[in-house]
Length: 278
Image 1 (tube, rainbow, N blue to C red):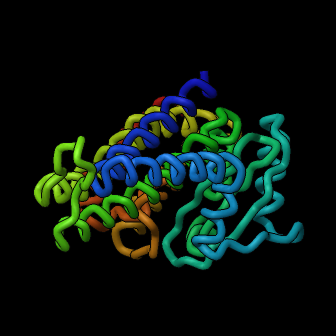
Image 2 (cartoon, one colour):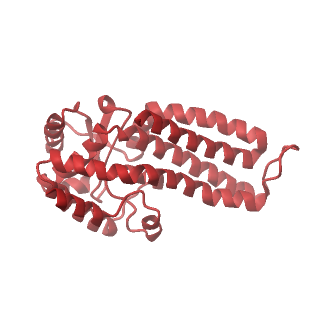
Image 3 (tube, rainbow, N blue to C red):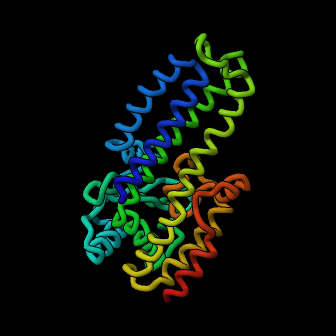
């Protein structure tokens, strides 16, 4: 089932890329977009984790760090292979997991998370991320982030094509027109975000349930989510919108527009469900 969902995700994102390419350059643009889509799908599967970790300047955590040992204990409890553990030098408390499968997984935490959470809350957050690893969500999240970034880039090209009078040039095509290109530049990224939202929201509940169980008490994760929600609105994070779906809470929570199109369910609802588990 996960493999099928990954295929559907890649297909939808690929069609969006082809549509934008066709609007910008007709058949030639569509051909270029098809090549780009093929490259991005290949890269997304094999290298999306490395790309995302590199984007945030993540540094691997040594074995003598407490985050490493908390992760190892929880992974052992869950019967999962030990993932690589990374630190991101950002003040906002947050975390994400990435990789193509449990044997090639990584968990990344921010410096702010380690500084602002106690060990129990830290265990709740890491347990949540291991839930994504266990449910094999990490490939889908990484693919969605990488391809959404590509779609945003192509949409930006459509905007500039509209400004400079671009559009489809082939004689057997209808001209895209300035307004068509502008519409694509606005709505294509939103369509990609809707795909991310549809995939991410239900998976967050499942990961919460998993993390609440393996960390010892669901209230550990519930308490962590309260802090995460509070700090995310006060401490900005230099985060790419395309990767928002990967984090435990939206790193863009301080933005009203980001809240409107958030890939995450309501934090209050997530806390309520965890308290009911407790």
